[in-house]
Image (cartoon, rainbow, N blue to C red; front, side, top):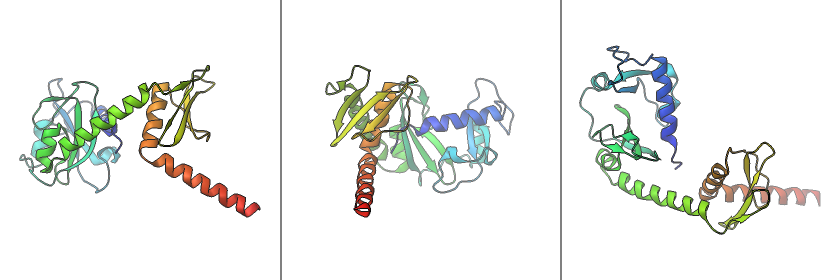
Length: 231
């Protein structure tokens, strides 16, 4: 699972709050002390919380949001849908109000979406999905950091570099406009990234997900079919 989905949720919430003029749609409170939350009027299975049209949601203060959902938060039927590393204690668990760095997004068919810590995620989902997912998430982050900082990178005079991972040669090259793009086994990439680090992260995620292996295998198959047809 890609781990940056909460940033999309935060951007969606920020846009909704702007559209609502920074006020609760029910009680109209909008002081800096008021915590505003996005309330989904309907829920569509399989749709991420930030994939709803603006007119299908309202912005409510925490009190009005609780009233809208029946005041009592359900204790079961929650599902974990994403994790995120905020980089510091920049978040707050919406269940216990403790500061958090590693955010877990959980959703309920009737209550909606919340950002919580791993322990609250465990309690709400009645499982160890929060703590286990957290451990897996940290493991993934550590492997990504090791990849970026690896001494095995061969650095080229033009600032590019290359490394082999999962039997794939990853080459990161600078573009003429100062950006970076990665190639796989001499197959030229198309997407540009603003920084070298962003290109390294994107290449790591693409290889780790297995999509790079699938893409290269499919490309080899198409080339073999084309050569057979021309012979």
